[in-house]
Length: 492
Image 1 (cartoon, rainbow, N blue to C red):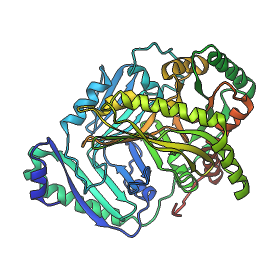
Image 2 (tube, rainbow, N blue to C red):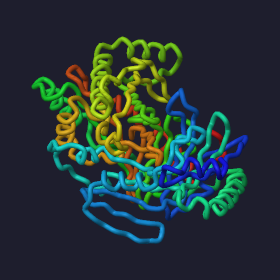
Image 3 (spheres, rainbow, N blue to C red):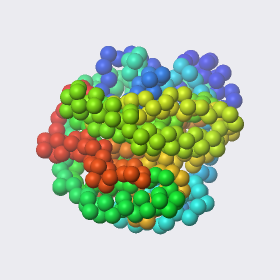
Image 4 (cartoon, rainbow, N blue to C red):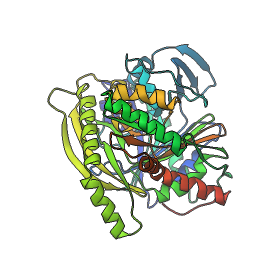
């Protein structure tokens, strides 16, 4: 985009992205991330193709301007000069001010993300979005409720056109003075990107054996308690989770080559800030905003993949004809419609795809699509407050389900059941649900998954369901641990 085009687009906005685009024959997100990563600094990588209607993209955030962590109402803000502040403030206020200060025009010729906030909102963040009384739960790992990085420089890659877009967001008032210098820096960055030809040696990774929080017997008792709540009319359905825990050394980024290669998913991600890391391959969108259109993609109903085509077809038939799975899916579609309805123009909420069979590496699901038109002046945090957590990770009715989950699990879920992705300076956003993931805090490692409990659920089958859901992550962790120090230059 030329200087004159930028100047015209910047007239009504406080900030503008300066970009440099070029074609490459191959682009390895893991190798590029390694090349620019500084182990003591935060790191963000998001890659995949969440929507068939859009090209697939990789986004790598460089050199955060600020970081925002939120826990129990306390905000900690750090900047790239080493300044740190703490205070009691609403996260909504901080996010709105941050995004508005650097608001940019929405430019269709650019990737859907060229700068903004990246990171995650935990499942537990929902307590700030409701006036309902949610129980206090234990937080043995000192997990944050939200962790966000302010990114003004992005490496974006379009998988379909093989185009790299390097972007730097600056204040519109500085455009004339800063343009030439920024373009010089972007050209240097292009040279650095083109010089990356291979992956570096990964740090050693090791882990102890995983142990589940609840044994089958304990889980069976909790299923019975859940079903009593269903019989009593408190809820219709609830997502009961069972985290697996271990200790580890090294970095979860070492797991990326194996997990990303063996679990192709709409969202593959890695995020690090301080002594917290998470890595995952999520199949499910929580919410996407493109201009004024909102998209939600509920997945509900699960079968494992078959050992051969015949078994795979059998499981697919079972899933598509199970009264339990179909009724559960319909219920969660209704919940998703209600969530979008609160932030959408009246009459615009529609189910545009219904109960499609979606197959992933280890499991298959039923998936639907819900679309709507956002109300005028709805902010990114308004949208998150309306939809988090997804009904597919809590249950229905949502508040009652969350209250019971707190009593049964009595433990912060963290990024599991929350969401991860980006909030763009242009007003768009894309957040996946925090599932099919592992996270660690210090040396403590967690693989988290859950199962939907309804009136006729059988505990031993539900116990197996969350093992099936976690298998791709568990297998990647174990395979990586067996290798120890890894140099995997294979493409995924």
